[in-house]
Image 1 (tube, rainbow, N blue to C red):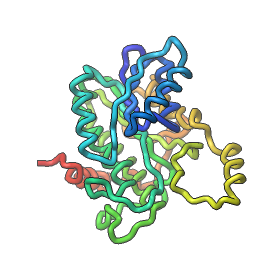
Image 2 (tube, rainbow, N blue to C red):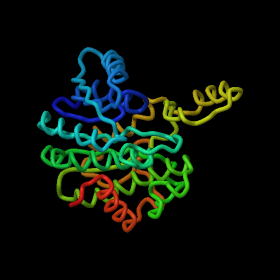
Image 3 (tube, rainbow, N blue to C red):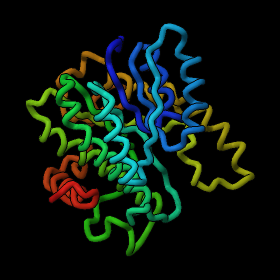
Length: 286
């Protein structure tokens, strides 16, 4: 049970995030839904509370747009002013294979939302997490990290843009961020671990074009072979709640088991370089 625990879930209004928030609320946690659209968040909150049942915890909605560094800073200021503790931060929100777009800060959208926004969010909330120790940070990545690398000469995809590669790169960045952060958190009582949820039926693929004639077959196959959001959320919930992972640091999990990563996701040198550049990009230096 999570009575007395405060948890932030980014992207909690749909998909895995919504399923995660529902289960954590059911376990009597105080769940802060960090979402960019208030109307969608409020509609989701009603459904979450209904599903979680009468003896559940407390649900709070806060506005957070991970595509805006200003929004991330405003969100964190509000949290630091209002919350006296933070037990779990779940970096769940993501955008998948969108057309080439730049954020208001001038960064490629997938890299900005999936990596940079969460990078800044986590760093700004670190002191509160440390004061609340033992506390946990959970980073939702993807097995698709395998199909990319970190090209430091074109992090912003200005020389070339492939939407599938850009997504995979942002998910690799999640794993490298987890690796470097785990070193920085040693002896603090705060742990950070990542997970890959597998292929889940969510609206994450809304930017992927599927021909009209193929759609019925695709929908049928997705119901047969893809995980439900509830199944996709199981590892997030495990990492948030289970005593089995107490003190476990810098690992990646799939299906509630530790997962072996490719060397590209465990490269200490690349992880440190990405961290240093990310600090500059989000304005954390100087």
